[in-house]
Image (cartoon, rainbow over all chains, first blue to last red; front, side, top):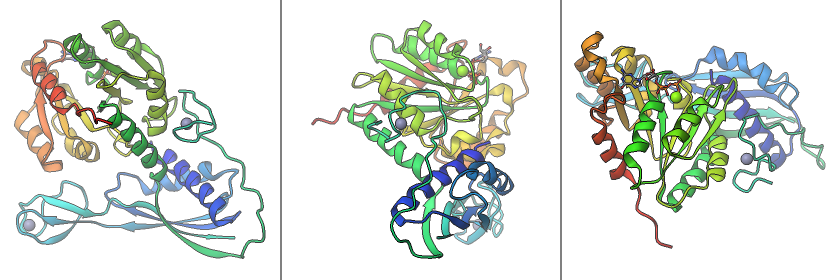
Length: 113
Length: 251
Ligand SMILES: Nc1nc2c(ncn2[C@@H]2O[C@H](COP(=O)(O)OP(=O)(O)OP(=O)(O)O)[C@@H](O)[C@H]2O)c(=O)[nH]1
Ligand SMILES: [Mg+2]
Ligand SMILES: [Zn+2]
Ligand SMILES: [Zn+2]
């Protein structure tokens, strides 16, 4: 699974940020993860320990803010919430839904010193 | 130091995660505070992929990222593609597998330069590995660069390599429901090659249903039906490749 590489990417990004913004310790990390981002939130949590071991993030608290999938029905034009990329429109029951959000996979903010 | 990605000169193809020492205690630093980042977890990969894409375009190279589950026929398809383009279009191949260099050996035997990247436990290629493989292949202008990703319909979807297009290969022996089971991959692809159509008489595979699922996940995706074994439909694929080669940017 690629959740571990994603978490390693997170650590790399934050290590670079630490040099620019002069912090040496991360206490709390908030991630935004969309339901359509193609990752398992539990697998991300699981990968956090091994990925941060021995880094300035070791022991930090990981908070994950889950974001719903949203889109616009191509048939009736309604803005709707979806669980997958291929849900049919829950309003009219027949339109394909063009995804507008729910693929977020990013660090929102950090508590550091 | 590595010029493309700044990775410290470790121009090796086996992938190991970079490790960095703790940043040293700089000058006087403020106390505990909140820093807003809004940075993608894929930011590093995406930045390297953008560099790859620039390098490909500058040399008029068409880069295709071939993704599929294991055994769908990627390497066989590449062998046949190389034979058909021989003498007209130069082709080079980057092969991604967890273990062995068998696929790269097959490609060389078919007549194209190839580099094998072994990802070990890694389940996908990333832009960093591809950048280095590209540097060492140093393909001529106008080359078609084929990247055979690790056989896996999940993880490679997230990692941009700098390719012009992802091409997803689905063989008819895998079942028609794959576009719905692995929607991220099918949503990310511009072309689906439906391979092993020579086996259609022997397997239960509902073509219309498969195409319907594919459209639902990705209405814009093109579909070509091929058999890498019998050669059926391959001329359509060859045309597709030729039509998507970029024109060389004149300096
Ligand atoms: N009948 C039939 N067999 C095929 C076709 N294409 C590939 N095969 C067979 O499918 C098997 C796997 O082919 P490969 O080309 O090695 O598949 P791959 O996708 O490269 O496999 P990995 O790299 O291991 O993921 C081989 O036995 C091929 O001979 C086809 O069009 N028809
Ligand atoms: Mg192969
Ligand atoms: Zn609708
Ligand atoms: Zn490097």
